[in-house]
Image (cartoon, rainbow, N blue to C red; front, side):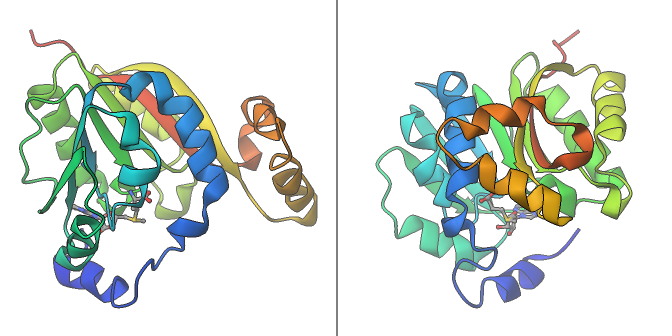
Length: 213
Ligand SMILES: C[S@@+](CC[C@H](N)C(=O)[O-])C[C@H]1O[C@@H](n2cnc3c(N)ncnc32)[C@H](O)[C@@H]1O
């Protein structure tokens, strides 16, 4: 796992991943999550500077955003979002108890395979029977974030995959670039669900954590 100091270095300048420009991702996430989060209490892990807290979780009843970078959290706090509060912490050390939904958008792939196992076990224990949203690039460049591997891990630990949503496509080769531009046209996002897995870059999983035994 990277440390707070590592992530603070990323945040030396605002918006290191150009998240505020990812409007298409915001639009797709908003559509996917509208019903799941409306009037719910949400724990948003790896919330960074609060971009998604504002753009996606505004309809939640309440949001607690956690990020390991205190630099990012200071920026998130300065947004003064009426339904949110922010804390600087390593989410592996934070309590997951007492929320309707846990959202881990684009942050779990920083964990090692062992840490991810520990993370999912913690969700199973402290968030039993409730919803976990988890997203990331479904590529095996870190050797452990491929779709098959994730599904295997989810089901082995007793998570029930409710649905997955494709969020974005690759920009290479040039044929993919054409598709990437096509899906940005009005209603183009509907094509996302029909695309072959080999074209998909980021995917969001909605999972139900195993019920307490
Ligand atoms: C790529 S950014 C994604 C930000 C936001 N979730 C989004 O998708 O727009 C990943 C964020 O996860 C945070 N992060 C990574 N590991 C973390 C951990 N163990 N505990 C808390 N935050 C973590 C980083 O500081 C960073 O802000």
